Image 1 (tube, one colour):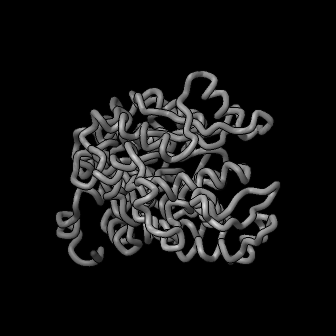
Image 2 (cartoon, one colour):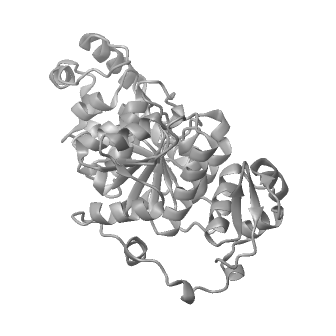
Image 3 (cartoon, helix red, strand yellow):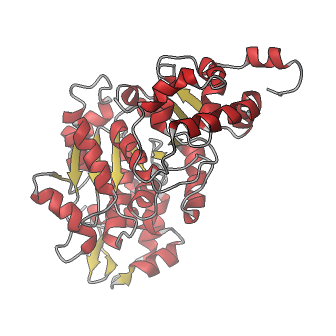
Length: 409
């Protein structure tokens, strides 16, 4: 994919996606402007037309402004694009994408997420790292505040793990707090369904910096998706746009924790516009982090107490969708395995759960000490503790956890 040799030959050999990716990376380009320029037209033709401003002016004039994005006059934008088109090298752009393992998708072409393609605000161009093929299956978005409480983080991690085990793709925005906890849960040991993160900046721009390790794991085990071109900074105006993609891809949106005016409510609004089911996790009436979710429930939003509630809502949401639930997900939504058919409790524990169980005592042990003794991360430990509690092997005691003999399991 080298850019050396005969320029005419190189350009003729390039796929249209190379030009689409180049257009997406032009200065002052927004998803709306790109949609206006590209819809129904070959990207190579648009790229060529940038040298003749007048042919694009009418399309560009109809693009709606984005709140928070610096507005420029149409003539200023076209001047900037014309100069950029002369300097840009689509062959080099394509080579860099290939070398970095970044995939480009265009609406209407194979590989583009089918559910998103039907959306009125579907991006013309998407960029991905890892795999996003799983988006053709049932998807649940787990979203919430960046300043999550221990309660919120543990619930998000538990939902992420349990939904993944049920064959559901867990979607979130890879932000700190609830998003990160949901992804950690979906990536826990023995979680079989790869999650997908939809990010606000480029798929190569780690944000926040604290999520570097989680980001790297998602690239290998799951997928990272964005409409922003590689190198794009996660600017504030991009996040509401990111949230609309999460809502458009999901069959069900679950808000775990949200302040009264939290960013997760942008995802709720986008879901409501699209008729996507929204559930909220109830929280303490004294917790500011649950003000938004408790208000949603008070206003008539469905309640998500656990994964069973989410799976029941998912089954209903998928009833009229072309992507039917797989037999494993449908069975999990409708029924549980009779307890007398389950294997012995000890046989149902993963290596992670054994480590957490060994960290407990017959008296209360703090959550922090359990994490330290087991050597596991917060989200993974939280999921393991909740599973041990469900099996009757652990119980909350004050601010800590105690070991039990499991005879109730």
